Length: 231
Image 1 (spheres, rainbow, N blue to C red):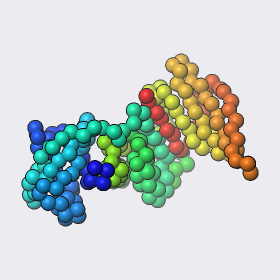
Image 2: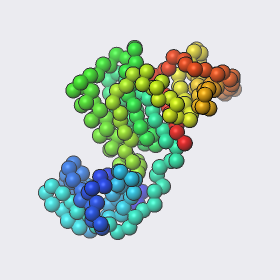
Image 3: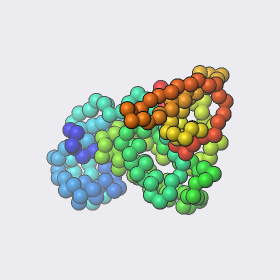
């Protein structure tokens, strides 16, 4: 089952014990994978993450009909809801970030336009990029066996992040965090206050040492990459 081809469909493509595959997946099944009637595939309802083991029953020019054999258990997704806020990098680095983040189990990716970002996207250019990034997330979800496709949000500003920070229980800020050596800032949302633990990693010949200190903060400058986790 782990090596079997997997495809995503909308809930309205499922009718009782039949699933209708449309669009680009039709060409992929027919001309790339060269599957035939009676071959098995896994189809996931992307609206509720239900997996179905199916047999191809009909192959047409514009659609493929599959018969549901059984419902498969959902074992691919974590119970931790992860959102990444990612500063816009140069060239095509964002595509690699989206691909690998999807493979690692992220639920949502939010591109962020930071003050020093060289990349500037607006209007039609932004829309095209979001569509391409969403497609990359979909392909990565299929290849890694995910039961959902991470949502690629529209480009936001840092002020949008600060407005939403209370929606998350744990906030990890990777970067130098004011130190000249690699570190991770961990923010715990405890209601009226936010506790910050600096986990500073200093490398020595004998390995890594960790220093921990506690602060209460209300605001601090944010670095290009954020991980938000909601339990």
